[in-house]
Length: 286
Length: 279
Image (cartoon, rainbow over all chains, first blue to last red; front, side):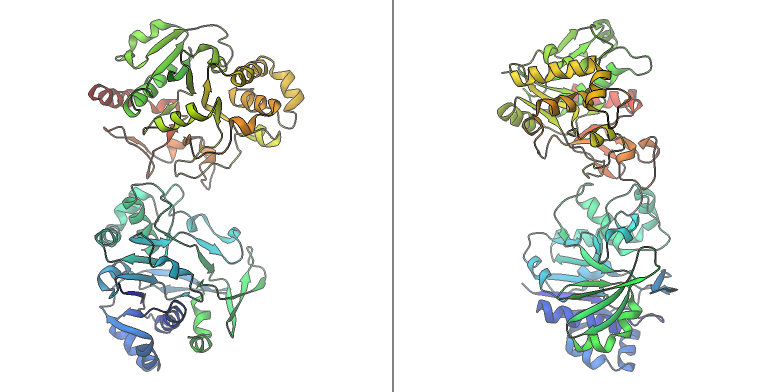
């Protein structure tokens, strides 16, 4: 059985997903000791060439899987500490992972999820065709999380986090990804039934709805990856030294920051701009 | 050794409790294994059963109209015709076969009272909005809506006797033992919890188990981000023709305590009757 990691990167004018995916891939490859493939598009590859990371990318990635850039008008408010901006999100093709992956067992990760431990290795041989991050754990405390970080809506189903998804090439997993795709293509219909906000497509919601449907409309304890340790976009990655990442963590009322450091711990960093600012130090870690 | 479910109803000015008991009994017949599907109904006037299409779903009918001003369920030990009984609230529906729960209690318990309930989304209910009396007075979190007991149990006899004394003398017991937060009414839940505490038998009659799994639909404990008066303003209640029940986007597989008495309407009853007739 082949195992490997899959990352998606479609650059936007605002964010260098190519660089982030390279860092995420390098760290995952180093700490999980499996190959990594990238799903990307011609313009993002061109950007890699322009920004002089293509050579590094071809050494880190086992495969560059070139697809058409998805057409989307998804936009999202993103913070960089206290600064806010609307940025485009090109991430609507995640359901294609089943068809595109070259591996029998795949760990699909977001490009802002950095793996510093081998904890997820425990899941390669779990007897579940599809596993998804079961929740997020805020690095500060649960107080900063909103209702919509736990459920897809006020009365709706549990929200899983597609930041980490592991799956096998099996009919059941194919059904799962087909269902994700069906939910995506009929997003408004499912928003009516599941009562979520459909103004922007969100992978986490499509994956959660598909899991809920295929689990028989109940919360199953199976099919879950560990909670995703997360720093919010109001937090700032302040320094990268040796194996230590230090963040400035925004307190719940946003009035002050407190420092927090991690080592050897997988982390989802929502403040993408601060990843980019530390790109060269992070690249040195891979 | 006989086993059965005991339902207690009496006349009420605005709620047809017999209809609710009928719906529950139909759902028991539709889902439980033979031998674990017997139902006894305690009612203040047997004549009312004449209005039901399938009153055979009640295997025993016991006419009883004493002490109607108390909660009749506190007399469950003296009213049951079974050696082993689960006394239920009537505003509930069975959605799956729970015969194995009954088997466990028959084998292992003299008296067991539900002490955990779930939201329609399957989360354990931790909120105490309706249970301040319990938390403030450090009472065990008992739910009398599912009470198992053996008829020949001394423990059960002593427990139910004290429960009745508490219900008979609410002011005295409240002043003495519930002073931190007095309930408006000392109901069966409060009386059973206080009796368990006074007899120091909570560990014997309410030890942690994964069952009975009861979905409790009181709206303020559904983990919603806003206050709610009635849950049906926010989520749908869908019983299909196979008797499968969904609330909101969740398939229900526990006993559903639906709370809102108008949920069991004629359409629901027709669905449950058809399933029972075809079984």
